Amino acid sequence: MKEKLQELQTKLQTSLAKEDIIVDEITFEVKGKYKFLTVTLDKVGGIDLDTIVDATKVVNEIVDEIDIPEENYILDVVSKERG
Image: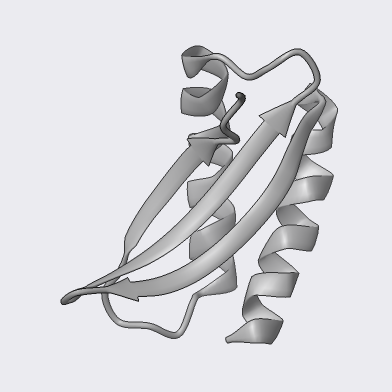
């Protein structure tokens, strides 16, 4: 799984860099009975909701291409918290 997540991060960073989006972190966690693949994105000056929506489309395509070996999980694309 670690190799798949690294491959995902590399491909996402390459694709999203065109929009100046930074892939801050990718995690795969089990919380209760659910599994989450979380992609945390950032951008200089912050990242707005429209940008997250557009980036999610790119993330979705690349996640499908890489084929994460888990059967069922929730893909969660989020922005890095400011504060």
